[in-house]
Image (cartoon, rainbow over all chains, first blue to last red; front, side, top):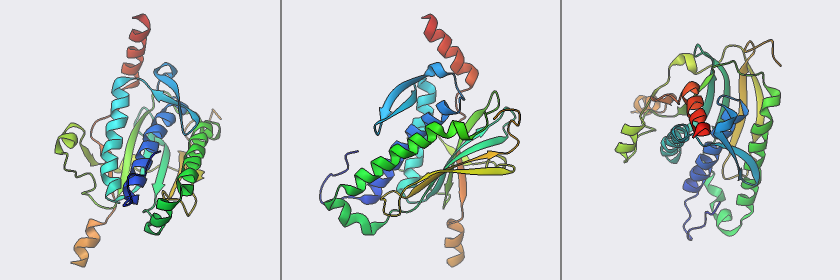
Length: 219
Length: 36
């Protein structure tokens, strides 16, 4: 997590990069932990000192990477409130949502960051804990129904959030307004997973919601 | 004016137009990997 590149560090840029790197790893991890794809497409790696599973299927890896690159455009403009990995059953009804809620960067930490690695070390520890919580989230949730799939949703403060100078990229991987039917769960039960401290350069909380009647026969 | 900026800041939920690869296609890819 190397972030020092001179005296005039752009804290917002740093936080955006860290968040998007973490988000990409987390999406791979969620897909693995929730068993949406065959176990064999994942390979073991390490991130922030934690064993993780990364997808090695080229098309799926590219899909996740392209989605995160699009999200990064909006995060850099400070327009993202939440990123949601929503799991849908075979009828495309949402049954589970992993919600990453982020707060704007605190500019008053800027001077401290330049003179002290404390914030970055704390953040790395925090991200490690987030990944560990995703790893064990399986034990707190009901099994996902067979033939489930996923969607990525980005809650933004403005419709222009995905606009970027790289129009070629957006032509290759365009975004649209999400259908209301995938944006909320019926009878959700919320399970908080982890939050960063109030002093963190990246203030974020992660929780998971699942619909109560997802698969009542399995615990 | 104020109304315009308030409208601009309304929450919009975006999603990729493309869908992720289907499980059956990924499973087929995995089988091919194992036989090759």
